[in-house]
Image (cartoon, rainbow, N blue to C red; front, side):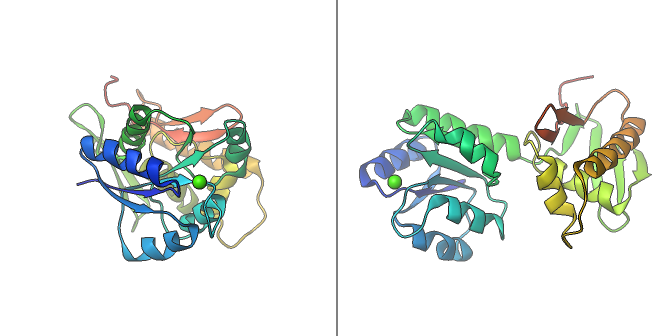
Length: 228
Ligand code: CA
């Protein structure tokens, strides 16, 4: 059962969301104030959160940042103002998608499904036989029987991208992930690590480009299940 947490203080809207999600086969829980979200999440496991921004007690942005400090659970932010989305994207909250009110409940269900599908870790990258696996002990990556050794940084980059396929990671996000001691590094450093990583991956899997650069935004991992 896929479990969705609805954080919404408008009772009518929360009920509507819950109804549609139930019809689509999801299990839901609802919270209507900002302060209870993080404590609740520390006690309960969920597969996705629909997070309203304007909440009594605590702001949704603040909650989102806090959740990201301990969990990678998918988050869809719900905002009442469409013009706010650009600003939100710039804040790099780590949310997986954004939805503006008013939204159709059908669209909401479609977005929830799309985010869940996108974040499913791919076991298979190339039809039935192309398998990618990562060994965190030795920093080795194996694709379809061939393997190579990565540096610690390359391994961490690949691991981050691989576990959230389709998600765009900005350079600064990747820097945060791999340089936890806050060393000063430049965007160029990330680019050069990614370049070396892509070269190694292309030797293992010449016919597929697994790491894509997204102009002006960053990088994403894309399994190519039906290519080849
Ligand atoms: Ca609200």
